[in-house]
Length: 163
Image (cartoon, rainbow, N blue to C red; front, side, top):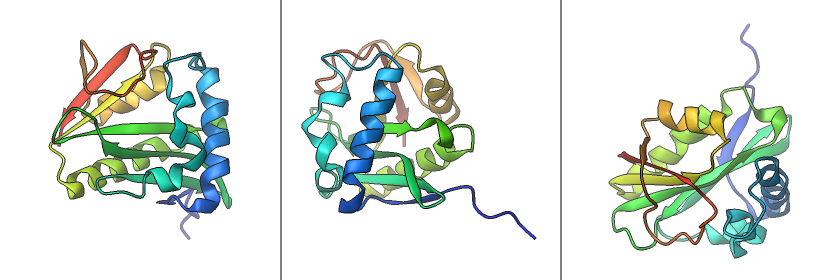
């Protein structure tokens, strides 16, 4: 008999908004990303389901045991035609190490291809080593400067991959 799935990946729903906001607000400070210039302060954090309910955008959550423990999505990168941004991909500790990052990354990149993007971009921070290892495994390569107009001037690591 096979083991039960370790997690469930699904599109975000309005009922998930408060939980996802709490996850973002809990995880980002864990990595020193709580000051100005970080996604923690984006207006969309409190209404993620509505923010990603638009053309070219999708956000997914990951449940384990019926509880949302993480999420991530894609949306157009302002100022860069044909490029999406991997956005707000954060997991609580109980979800880490289970393959959820790989599964979510695959789902986000599939959505990006379905939307017709040619490139995927992301920004992160020194010290988020596990996340950067995931990005490298998914084919992202470091680039020397930011792209687009994310407003996240606190980030200092930038990655790009072809789709």
